[in-house]
Image (cartoon, rainbow, N blue to C red; front, side, top):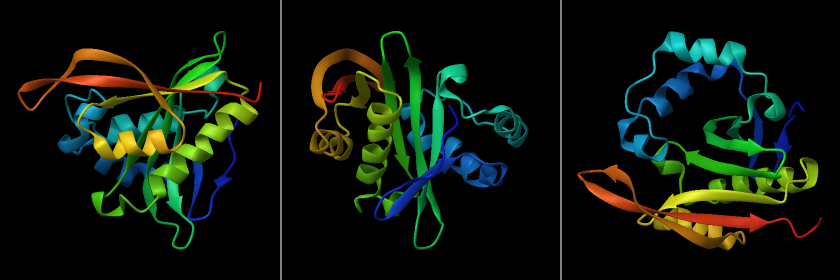
Length: 179
């Protein structure tokens, strides 16, 4: 299934394009957010260009889908929202978000992006559940997901080692009540 644009009030989501190489390089190579994706080393331009050339935007084929978050008023890219670990048999998927740069956060952009992609998961993909994993000290993300009806259902103890300490990772789930 190939994804088209998804529009909200302030933003729209679109598929990755070759023109996204520079922002992809910037975000993927920012060590301050590596703990969110288990990244341990920078990506080269070559490796990301290769990725962009091969991505099909077919979640059934790739088991993942990355969408670009774009401000409607300026067409400025302000982050990415990802579906990962897609499981068509059990009808579930993980959802991740990064709003970038940090100055764009706390403006409702992330909430709108998660809402749009969550609706896509339930209405188009007909999934049973969407889940997210959030570090225990990431209070803005916890508030965001809880405000959209995600419920904390579990804890992975000492799951992420970052900044010299182990941190718990909370599991949040939202069930599709329409199917």
